[in-house]
Length: 117
Length: 213
Ligand SMILES: Nc1nc2c(ncn2[C@@H]2O[C@H](COP(=O)(O)OP(=O)(O)OP(=O)(O)O)[C@@H](O)[C@H]2O)c(=O)[nH]1
Ligand SMILES: [Mg+2]
Image (tube, rainbow over all chains, first blue to last red; front, side, top):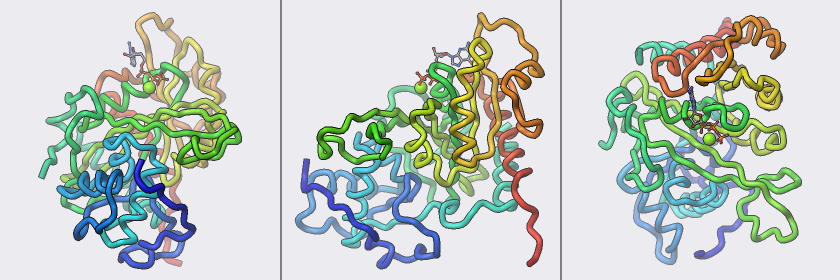
């Protein structure tokens, strides 16, 4: 294991990365979308590097990243928060957690499902 | 992009973690989550695998005896932990407007604290039931009700399932008349899509009409 991730009460990426910060937004979630931004900061290796490399070619949700890295979701949260705090990871909130699902969204989901048939 | 529409990749199953990651489409999709739950061996993993466009992924979640989700049980010595396996898959809809995640999770009551955490932000749940042991579904129904999720019950029939009318299932499960009850074969895509449609219609029914304040 690399440097043990630290617990924090307010993930710093909420303050430093755009798009979030709406009232009621809570930190990283299984469906937070992770994508590498900028270079891997010096001094971060191990699982931090693995996560950063995993989401360099494209975006994945935190849950998918955890599964690919074979890490518990909760550990992946801390690793992602470390990277985001250093600006090495962009994090986008999953829309339903940031704002409750409304009828318009549910109707569009329904037509998307019907189109599968 | 490494992104393929669901229809052409639905048959793509296999072992899970070894595969290359399927990155999200560059369309900035809205991500949504539905839970797929029910008793042991009822077909949850099969259902998720049938619908997922990516090889299903798997995480292990640890819960202490006290019920708190923990990141690493080794750092909290003296506590016993339960591991809960979560299978999940993904379905891209409307050319990348939505990505729907299906979370297959066990439906035993003792998983309640973790279950609520897993279900946070979910639109609804599909509860799979086996008519040979209907009472086993009560735990899963309790979990979704306590998480406040709208749900649909899907009867998964197995070859040796004795015939039982859906009305009788509804009565035995004491379902609310508004709760949809459908039948599926978790191995068959069309019916699984129908079950998700029934669930989404129900989710929609329960959402308030948008009226200007
Ligand atoms: N005939 C039939 N068999 C099914 C169906 N769904 C699942 N099975 C079989 O039932 C067994 C259990 O299915 P799983 O999908 O592993 O069930 P599960 O709910 O994920 O099981 P646990 O995770 O162990 O609780 C497997 O052998 C499946 O192939 C179905 O609709 N019809
Ligand atoms: Mg399973």
